Image 1 (cartoon, rainbow, N blue to C red):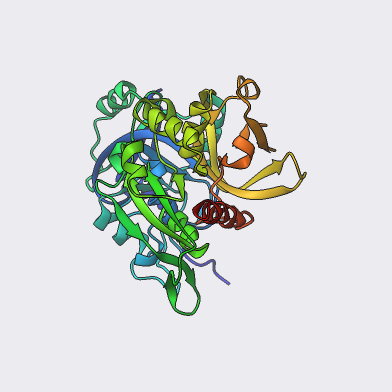
Image 2 (tube, rainbow, N blue to C red):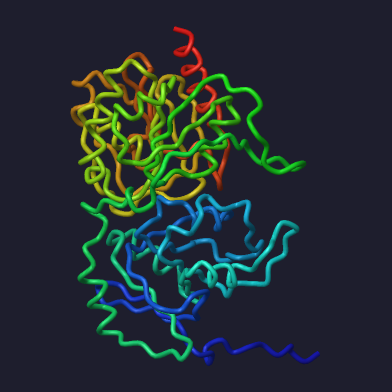
Amino acid sequence: MDDLPTEDLSNRLKTAVLVLADGSVYHGEGIGATGEAVGEICFNTAMTGYQEILTDPSYAGQIITFTFPHIGNVGTNREDMESATPAARGFVVREPVPAPSNWRSEHSLEDWAKDQGLIGISGVDTRRLTRHIRAHGAPNGVIAHDRAGQFDLPALVEKARTWPGLHGMELARDVSTSTPYPWQETLWQREGGYGRLDQARAHIVAVDFGIKRNILRNLASAGARVTVVPAETSFTEIMALAPDAVFLSNGPGDPAATAGYALPMIKDLIASGLPVFGICLGHQILGLALGGRTVKMQQGHRGANHPVKDIESGRVSITAMNHGFAVAKDNLAEQGVAITQLSLFDGTICALKAKDGRIFSVQQHPEASPGPQDNFDLFSRFVDQAASASQT
């Protein structure tokens, strides 16, 4: 029997490039929008949830390399957006994006990315690129898509080299809401889609440093009426809303830069007696407010399979993570702050507790989206604290 004919991909027009600051060039085929975008190149190991990842505001300023080769299989839809528009600057995949096959799909990844102004490249050896990042750290880079395949590579290298990078960069203002708004939508269910909060047990003010919608849905599903406020909201403005507790959200950029305006507000919250819960960037800024410091990681943690050990119980949870900065271990004990969880990958801090548990935070994303749901109970625990505070 004759062999079936196969397509020679090597002869296809290379319509996109990924150029790193060290001069490395990766050729491939363009996906989505045309043009150029500069950012930090990172990688995410999750096998599912590419739309949630691309719309997570924590990825502002970054170009995401997906290590799982098949991205785009289930298409895209309006319900899986974690924010109104993608926060990432671009994305890199191994295989060409396929036609979607899923009952919830509304658009292909290709068409969706084009509509959203998001630049992608396929046909890249993502294993090689990931090894490069692991060995040398997350580099600056430029992703470019031109249908004619015409690129000024020296200019793109120079653009990558001169971009300042995320260290010292404040990005939370760019992705935060400009005005306060209420939130009562609950988690998605197979029958009926998203629900709505029936009866609130507490009122929580969520400070938006780049908040994901599924964090808000988890808070509402746990019984909280939520008011979302901009990143630069003052302590006085928060207290005027009469919260029972305050949530500090995830977000992008260097936590030390965001702390420049957020730290006074958070320190006043700590002194107020209200319960405070922080996730991701909120965890990092809370660590700074409690007397710690933050450091830039070489490659960061981004994926849906990160093992975290709870020091008190010994329980190990598989978690979703997305961060390139971490809270350093020094100085915390002197400030009366307990480290309650550690990463089993590299021993970095994954959770903090202070003020007898009234103040707590996690580096992980317990709302998953995508990822495991081992720690959904953190939201119930926080709302329980808020409900108790409302009765005192």
